[in-house]
Image 1 (cartoon, rainbow, N blue to C red):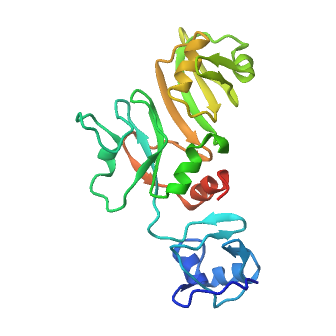
Image 2 (cartoon, one colour):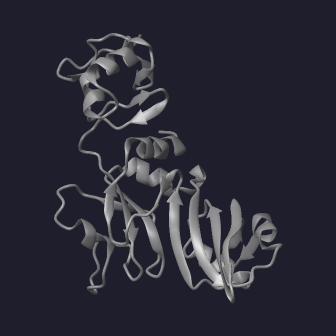
Image 3 (cartoon, rainbow, N blue to C red):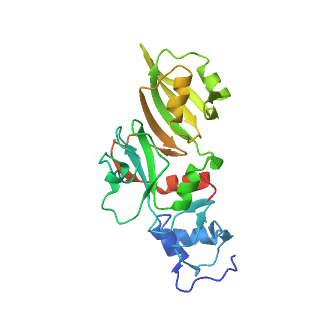
Amino acid sequence: MSDKPQDPSGVRLQKVLAQAGVASRRAAEELIAEGRVTVDGRVVTEMGRRVDPVRAVVHVDGVRVVVNADVTHLALNKPKGVHTTMSDDRGRPCVGDYVRGRSDRLFHVGRLDADTEGLLLLTNDGELANRLTHPSYQVAKTYLAEVPGPVAKDLGKRLRAGIELEDGPVRVDAFRVVDSLPGRAMVEVVLHEGRNRIVRRLLEEVGYPVSRLVRTAIADVQLGNQRPGSLRPLNRAEVGALYAAVGL
């Protein structure tokens, strides 16, 4: 049981959990009674505990639950030709165009070059965004690339062993051929690097220049069948997985 003074102006913990979509208030009370809920790193078992939803860090079964209703996490399927900036002084299409008019101040997590499509995360949680992009947390990113075929059988082994680029070595976490057609192939590359145009530069260095590149996943967040140009809120499991990936 936590001995930390509670905020008398706060909201009852079971109500906070219910509003966050974790469970009904009654089910949330059971979670608390079973010692499955922590607030700011301490197990809470008393029913009357009040917390500040803006500042409290709440975990259920070890998974972070965002209880602050003002925190936003979105997935954008960035189309080709859209620049990863929130505004563009040259009038080019940019990520900011897709969230224009929203009251929350969002920023993109990392970037995709204009020619690369796929999953881009948007949030107003600065600490999460910083950790997701910092190389020390080694968050895996998955890409689908179209390259000339056929693909050499030892390519995956070479990429996993590491390739030297002008700004240092890079190695992939995983590689597989997804599809092979006459003259071209689709390959999946998983790596935790965030350097500029890293997938394109890596594949070109080994003789397979990329004609199309799509980011399909960041950690456990999948692009799936989300249509190009669309935004969707991340679900609770996806948000929890992102926080877990960076130790929050």
